[in-house]
Length: 404
Ligand code: NAD
Image 1 (cartoon, rainbow, N blue to C red):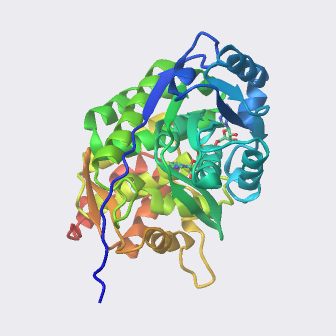
Image 2: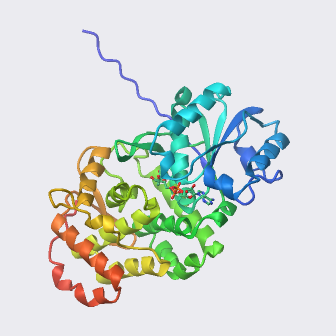
Image 3: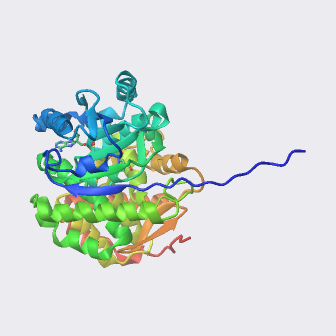
């Protein structure tokens, strides 16, 4: 009998997340500097809302490439695709990009440069990762959530079978470039939605960062760019640090710490017909799991209140009616999110909860009756924030935490 042949090998990934203003000013070399080699073919893809708010963007890109033609050569005029979740809810735009790759001679030494919100980047990244088995991708996120989370990670996807991110790849970009100027044209919803991902990562990893968000909540709400730039920077730093050092960048195991609050969030997005923004759903999902952590005796009351008050100061909702939607059996639809969350990753159900600000804890069981109580608490808090102070009794906190 022939003995098995086994070989181990590693693939090393390294990418920079860069921060700038006025990226397409010809004397800004941030983009030029990440192109490896000379006269590389470059295909630009632009989110339709970014194109609408920046009518000179295509001309600026053409001028930039012309000025830096020793490094990059425009393969075709920038391709505009719809922004928002609609671009992920179909394979249509993935096909548009794959066809463009074929039609315009984009090979594995060429670059796709995707400029847009997290949804559009997810779609473009999926197309880039699968055409020719992987074309070099440069992400230029244009939303808060894109710059501090979706754009700086290693995942790409589109939705299918009514499920978020059902089709996708793990494929890091060669570089991520955050131009803060793009954030100026966001509407208030998208300006604020990305703050929830920063709260998430701060709650898990950095109490000082959480305090910073808490203290600057009003300024962030008033669209002060200074705290927003720091929020984006620190959140991106914590995210990429996690990816690089947690030992499971491609999520082979059952644990997905950065998906804190996401089991409910993804389900709520779907139940709302993607009317709720991802970041808005994450805010509600975090409030829910933080309240559950408190109800199960893991988190103290002061910390629980501080989290909910922070969302309140930011003007973000902590309750959505999707939490109370019932199926034909009278069960809450949202609870199916737990099973879908587990199925997406495989293995044992693993949900991140909180045992202190800056300290996550994983559990493998969720008590749905307690979770239902938490939904009622959030609904009440959202209606009259102060009333909850007297109605949530410490006496309800009796159960032992199901810590690992
Ligand atoms: P989004 O991409 O849906 O964008 C929201 C809206 O803002 C869209 O209408 C878009 O066209 C518009 N927009 C984008 N940039 C703009 C600008 N500069 N000015 C004005 N309007 C602009 O929302 P998002 O919050 O950026 O991203 C959410 C998506 O990211 C979800 O699909 C989520 O699943 C995904 N995501 C992916 C990861 C990952 O690791 N890949 C992580 C978190 C979230």
